[in-house]
Length: 402
Image (cartoon, rainbow, N blue to C red; front, top):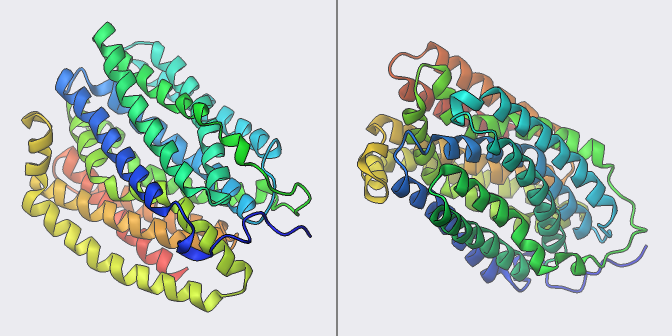
């Protein structure tokens, strides 16, 4: 077997480019916040609802269908395999499914969530195509340990999206203009020509994509519904589009830790894959125990911080009408911290190819969230936040056991 092209590079976290990748993740998170902040300043919370619905629904689809593609490509390239064109075909299939589901959701909820404007159907289809390519590129770069270039990709995508949104809104002051900014951001990374880094060996035995993706998607679907569907769930519990905007802003802002995890997990996976290939299973178990211990402490701390200053943080960054109730802020902060911890721990199962087990943890968590939200009393926002926090804590406990 041909030696992987990355074999001569430093192992673990000593490979060059880590600083730029972390910086890119931070810049990407700030750019995403800037996008939301700009929209909330330009539009009132009722008018802003369609962008909140578009961002939320596409975030779920991306993390369920396209992040698994990135993880698969990263793992295969880290093993020394050439990605293109085989993985591009896999990505096309998943992006096509993303487009169909997204277009179907927007069509069904067009009047309730998208102000009856069919342009959002076209936008979510184009978003699926652009980000399908983006995640293949990110997987190739991460698997080849081109971490500096991953960092640049994260910066370009986020900053171009923000700049394009501002430009389009200047031309036409409508929420749909911000949707076109999202579309441009996804396609912008093609300028980085990431395919030039695909220098692996096509003869390396491949992990069957269907087996890997079936398990990963089965696990990530309930995970991302649990993490991201709360703003949409509030409509089912009697809330209106204004309350949807409040929860959307709150969740997007508080979700920063797990957004960073999604950006940086491509940095972690090649290292864990190397440990798994070398049979260092005790070392992997030790990593999980440390992550879980830290996660329990940070989850409690996150809830406390959310209670003390959560609404004030939202009011500081957004108009006062977007501020959540104090209990909602505390529950969302605790829940996203638990979700971030569980996502980090899940990378061990991904590295070992045991993606089917992800579904056990996240499905249990989602079921717990639904039951709690339905049985809880109080406002629609409070019920959704209570269910969300309960489900994430249950998922975290299950992930630790698995």
